[in-house]
Amino acid sequence: MPAKKTAYCTICIAAVLLLVLCAGCMGQSAGGADKKHGDGCRTVVDSRGVAVQVPGNIERVVTVSDGLIEGVMTVLGEQEKIVGVGSSCIQRNFNYTYQTVGGETYEYKDGMNPVTYLNPGIMGLPRVGESSAGINYETLAGLEPDVVILRVGSCTLRSMEDEGVQKTIQTIESLGIPVVVLKAHPCYEEPGLSTVSDEIRIVGDVFGKEDKAGELADYLESQTQLVFERTKDIPEGDKPSVLVFGASPRSRKEGGAGNVKGTDTIESYFIEEIAHAKNAYREPGNSVLISAEQLLALDPDVIILGTSSGYHPPEELYSAPYYQNVAELSAVRNRRISSFPWEPCNCAKRLEYPIDVMVIAKAAYPDRFSDIELDEWLLDFYMNVYGVDDATARQLRSAQWMDWCIYTCPTCG
Image (cartoon, rainbow, N blue to C red; front, side, top):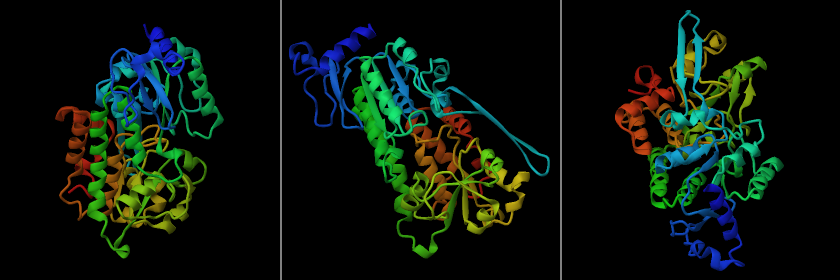
């Protein structure tokens, strides 16, 4: 019974006093995870540096994440153990419609997180929390989880400095439930990707699948390393300016043209440190509101449209009536606009982060990446990450609304 396992692991935490009762929890490896994967407990060191005792045989898991934890569990073959989630965005599909100045209508249907497409049953699971809402501890406890894995930096739990987040962790722990905490990249002063790999490996430790988790982390890193190596020698004067632009309807309601990603964001890190281009917006800030006049003054060589209160395809900036006032932008005139994949609840990057990097690289340096067809690269990516066949990879590409690159992407060949 899950309740018995939880109680047993509570005893394990007091191992110094009750050594004889939890001998199965001993033998922690240098990497932080005990190699005994039987019915006893093992130790997992989470992102806080806290040693957490988890059952050797985990059957019920509650996740609080926008897809990263659930994605890793899917790759590890552990997704069926999820009994409750903490994000609304992995329980929905999305639909958007845009009209052009010529009266054409573009419809985008059934957009979703890859985790949701691969695990449709996740839509019906109990939800213990979501963005702008506290954790429902009664619901969580009623699910009798063997472990709760939560990701701070996600939309539900934004910051380790938040007293509410600290209280959440403490309250769940007080229920006698082991809590493994992951710290996403927004929790750190400097943006970077090594922390994502650390998170993946910790989830692997929880389920005793360290090797498979390590292979996943290494593959993701290899895809960004490819971009790094191809662009690292570009002279400063040859680097194009790239703007990550959010064509948000909320921003337009506030009187702006949209919002942009500043120099202290992970998107800027992708642009400048991996793709070796220049962030067109030179101030710090995340989702900074800018006017049409400011956008025209920036006049970036390349614009990448990100998820921002909805999905935004390249065609929106080219032909939506509310963007005709910026038609003189160089990126518009030269057809150098691309889009990130659909990323609902994009507070922290997930397993698909190399797609963002490749989109930037292809748009910034089409000649250097002319051998990579983005539509085919995407299929390989999904197959390598999730172990799916070609047909499923095509469906994942559609679910993230990346089919625009097949025919209309000016940098896709």
